[in-house]
Length: 316
Ligand SMILES: NC(=O)c1ccc[n+]([C@@H]2O[C@H](COP(=O)([O-])OP(=O)(O)OC[C@H]3O[C@@H](n4cnc5c(N)ncnc54)[C@H](O)[C@@H]3O)[C@@H](O)[C@H]2O)c1
Image 1 (cartoon, helix red, strand yellow):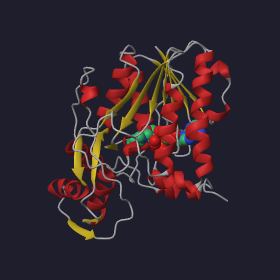
Image 2 (cartoon, helix red, strand yellow):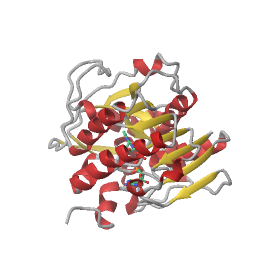
Image 3 (cartoon, protein in one colour):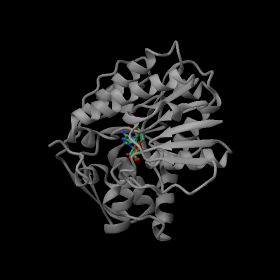
Image 4 (cartoon, protein in one colour):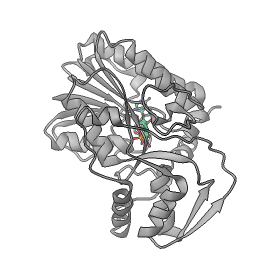
């Protein structure tokens, strides 16, 4: 198949693209490369360093599927420049789905976010519950889903709502909870937890890549939104899982500026035939192994918001 991966140089996109190439697909990556490019060269891979807002229609020629990951990709980064976030995450998404439709692409898969639910007390947060997004980032994801689904009579739409992703990628992110705690334990032998009682769903990056491939392989799965998260854990429990593998001290700071707390239920995804095979524990071990073998380059790019400020993407 010929597949476009927007954001293919990012944390998830790098692992997904390499896997698609291994499976024999031809991949076109479209990425501004804000965090560099760690993709290995391949004659089945074409990397286009461009903004999704300025693409020529011909890029979509004979493409079977678009996997759309290119967004301002977390809460603190989206708030740096809300106008830019709305332009990229929503208007950019609208533009490329229209280009895909114009070029008769049949299938569009969007990386939404599990955070669209906001704060939820329910034990099972399924796709039937309301979205009450509490940040610019969450709002852009919810609106993009609505915009995309409004085109579902013209192109197959699947919106994936990933939990917080964890595990190793050549474009490493250390601003996501499991990865951040693992790195703190390895480097400082101390983990700092803010609050600790908030519950967050998690997904190993290997499982998330499998989710995208599951949808690519099964375009007939019913149009709509799908949760993708398999371990709902308190932040403090995540710190303790890290401590089991990497001896360290846990410092708890009561003040917590991030009230998001929710559990995801991914029964709808499981009923499509998807089976997860990895875990948070595996993510911690993988990062530990890479660290001990000097395979992780820890630099400022690993913290999305700090790096985006540095390269001038904040407002004014
Ligand atoms: N990592 C997570 O925990 C998580 C959880 C839920 C949803 N998501 C979503 O999954 C997607 C991928 O996330 P990630 O963690 O790989 O983030 P990332 O920031 O590592 O990757 C995003 C990539 O998109 C590129 N990009 C951003 N704006 C662009 C534009 N206008 N044009 C072209 N390229 C652009 C960036 O250069 C980057 O390489 C995002 O949409 C994110 O919102 C991520």
